[in-house]
Length: 505
Ligand code: GLU
Image (tube, rainbow, N blue to C red; front, side, top):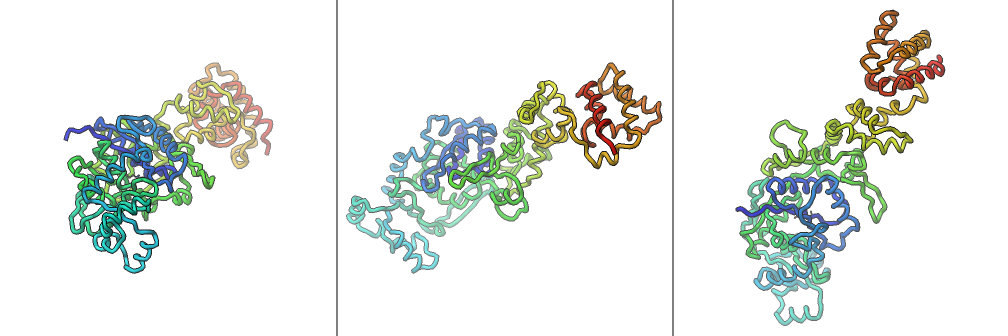
C-alpha cells in the first residue's frame, strides 16, 4: 500500500476541546508528519441540538497554540472540502440513496410514541432483525404506502439493515483483532428527514471515504462503533479502501479509577482544557493550560507520553523527536493515569530549556503590570539567576522582585533570628568595604568581603544572613554576591543604609 497517509481530527463542536481530545489530535498529527502525510480538520456538526457557538474557533485556536498545523480543514481549505459536515448535506443524500437502492437500508416511520410502546412491550427492545418486521417501515409497508408517506412529508429515518449472525472483525492497530457478532448490533439510524441530515455514523464513513483517509486514530469511546463502521464499508463495497483503525487508551483520573473529567480538574485544581473556556450559556469560566502559564511545548510533551512512550526512559522529547519516534503499535491498550504533578515538572523542564531571552520576553509584560520598567538585558540576566527555581513564568516575580525594587518590609522571623546586637555596626563597616571595591563583579566582591570578615574574625554566617536580610528583605534568593553584582554598588549600599536605619529590635 503506497497511498499517501491521510489522517483527520474530526471533533464535534459541542464545547471546549477536552485534553483527551487534544491528545487524539496530537497523535494524528505525529503520525501524519512521520509519514509525510496530510493532517485534516473536519468538523462533525450534524447534531444541531448539541452545537455550541465558539467551539470550532476554540478548537482551532487551541491546536494552533500547540503547534499542530493542519494541511487541510475548515479554516484553511483543501481539495476535499467542504470540511464542515453541515455544508455537505447534498453529498450524503446520494450515499443514503445508494444504501436504500442496494437493500442495505430502509425507511422507518415509527413515531417516538410507537417506539416507546414497543420498549414497554419487549424487555431490552432493540430495533434489529428480530424486531424490524413488527415495526412501521418500508420492509413491512407496501411500496405504495411507503411512497405516499414520504410524499406526504411524514417524518422518517433511514436505518441500516444489519444482517444478523455475521462475524465482524475490526483490526485495530493498538488492540489487535476485535471480533463481534453482528446480531448484537441494532439497525442504526443513518439519516433523519426532520433535518435532512445524516447521523454521525454515515457522515463519518462517507467523509473518510471521500477524503481518502487512510488511518482513523480516535478515542477509545469510539471502539464500540467500529464494527458498525466496518459493516458500512462492506455495504458500500468500499472494503478495499477501508482505513486502518487505532483506538487510543482512555485518560484516567489521577487515582486511576475511571475516566478523567472536568470535575476531577475542579476537585484537584488543574485544568482539563487547553485554553480557558467561557461557556456561552452559563457564563462559567473553566481554566486552561495556556492561561495557567504552561508553555505549549511542555503540554505537547506531557500529553504525548500519556498512553505512549518510546520504550526507553527518555522523557524530554520535543515535537521533532516525537515525530521521529511515535508509533501507534507502542501505544498502550490500558488507560493512562493523568498525573498533574508531571505536567508541572514538564513545564519546569521546558522553562530551563528556553533561552533567558525567550523567558524574559514572557516576563517583561508581568513586570510592566507591576509598574517595573527595566531593560531586556537586565531582565535576561535576572531570569538566568532564578529560573531554575520556578515551574511557571509567573512565579519569577516572587523569586526576583528584590532585583527590581528594594524591600519595603523585613520578614519578622528573619529579623528575630538574624539581626543581632552587633549587626548595625558590622554592616556599617561592610558599607565602607563595599565602597572601596572597584570591580563589583560577584566573584571579586566575594573575595574582598570574605577576607574582611576573616581579618576581623567575624562570624561569616551572621554577616551574610544580615546582609541578605537587608538587601532582599528575607532569607531567600540566589547567591548573595550575584544579587549585589546585579543591582550594583550604589543600590546595595543604599539598601544596607535603609536596613540599618529601619530595623531595630
Ligand atoms: N465526531 C467524533 C468526535 O467528536 C469523531 C470520532 C471519530 O474520530 O471518528 O469525537
